[in-house]
Length: 235
Image 1 (cartoon, rainbow, N blue to C red):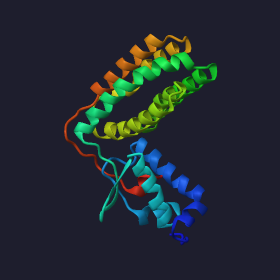
Image 2: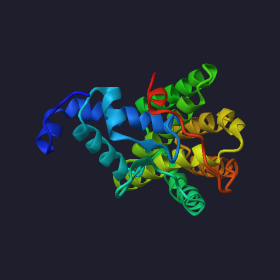
Image 3: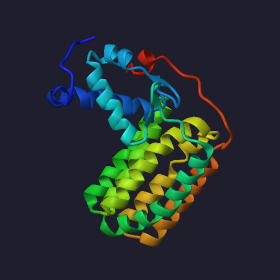
Image 4: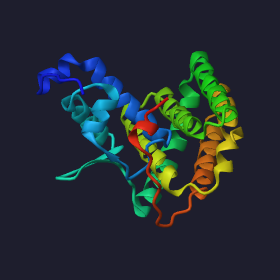
């Protein structure tokens, strides 16, 4: 493993590497290559990326702030593992917040925003065609975050981004109906409602879409089989 100076100054000097480690771990979690409960050993991650433990620790701490990683005293870092109660609460919160965001997005969306949403849908289809459901799920989450950003309500958009990060972990644990991933007509209909400025329809479509996703979860206690870090982080 590369030997680097320790301390905050080292992390600042190695900013690009810190960001690349954080981004790679985040993508692997969102794409379910790193599943909930997986131990994230600092030494092993450092060897995989060729960086110091200081940089790895900073990346893990950053991911813990976004609730993708749990830092456990004297035990280390693990991919977060939401409880059944939290799973229900997260989707209920999304069902409250995101429909209003969709209505606002329909009022504020510009042609470039609509084009970006359509690119997201095309990328989702490409991931599904390539038999890469993990990537499709990550792109689906980004689609919802983009709608919140278009709505131009930064504080609520921040809440939604955190909820969607938790949703990715919840889906990894409790997803029972993978066919729901292919029911992309909901995203198409949402984009058309936003493109035409039809706020009430966008709100209704988002609500029914989230209820459908919620119904695709099997909210019973379960665990997932871990993969090796090296295999999970290989792309």
